[in-house]
Length: 406
Ligand code: HAM
Image 1: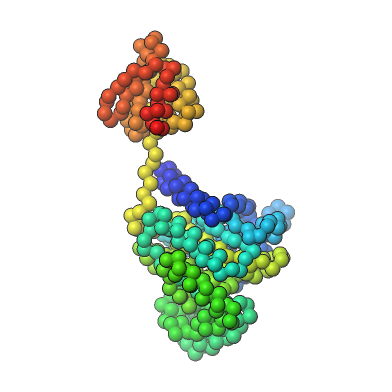
Image 2 (image 1 turned 180 degrees about the vertical axis):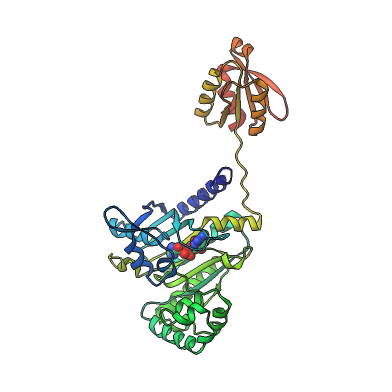
């Protein structure tokens, strides 16, 4: 990620950090490498992300490690290890690695901004978490974002549903895509997630998880939807939304950017994982969160022509034709006073330095020639307008601060 495109990343991350802080989240940084077993237990061996896409390696000590394919399991691992007070609210920025077929919007290394909360199963927290993501998209200026919501129920609700779904698919076996015709029995939920038209058609009128929820899961979903409505967050119930990771329970959700091609338009997703902490050896602790793919998000911004960040120009460019000592000292003093100051190097000619000053976009050039050295002054030129004035060298920093920062 090169400058100036990286300016957008910087702006994006600071917007997210600010919103996360307003809701009480702190930054968490965990290692890129984890024991591969963490993801096997947490996300599930049967999931595409672990079964087909995880980067694994053996270290010199013979341990099997994985480059993290996602951000949630490492957060939960850190929770189990450090046992912080609950509710524990964290946000993160992390690279994630998946051995997928690369294409626009899908990369083998992508980056996620995410947030997780451990220690509460209050459905109003689900609304709060979804609102954080929705507010972030809004802050970037995205308008064409659709939110789908579903419930995966509790583990106890799942077997009856999976059996009903399996029976439905068995009757349509020949209509499924090649992969799922052979494999649907193993994990029928995967078929709901399959984007191929055959599977989409075969699951059109499939049994819906929401019809198999027990009373408390149904009430939970109801309260979440009510809260979203009350917060003015438009959403649709999408009964086929299962998401690719096996840890989900109850609320699941996904944000799609409709300005992007539908194959790669998920710009964020998440849900509850109330059994995950226990599954990786911690005390029973409910959790919920989301991950947002930065690259895809920026593609969506491009498609909607929003969130264009122009590189910040420096405040001042110091031009010194007396050997460089004045440029060296003045740029340090200006920066110490909070001004963005550039200079050129290698003793260029006046003309060359002024050209660089122009090209940098700086508002002012501070010019030091032999006469200025003699008088202990500098010439300040308002670039673009060509107006100039003489300022004593001693007063320059204060003068600039008044002009630029006030
Ligand atoms: P995920 O849906 O697998 O969820 O990924 C989250 C987001 O990362 C996606 O919506 C998408 O924007 C982006 N993404 C995923 N794979 C790629 C890729 N290969 N290239 C570019 N972008 C990609 C998770 O990872 C969960 N950990 C989210 C979560 C947090 N659930 C609960 N808490």
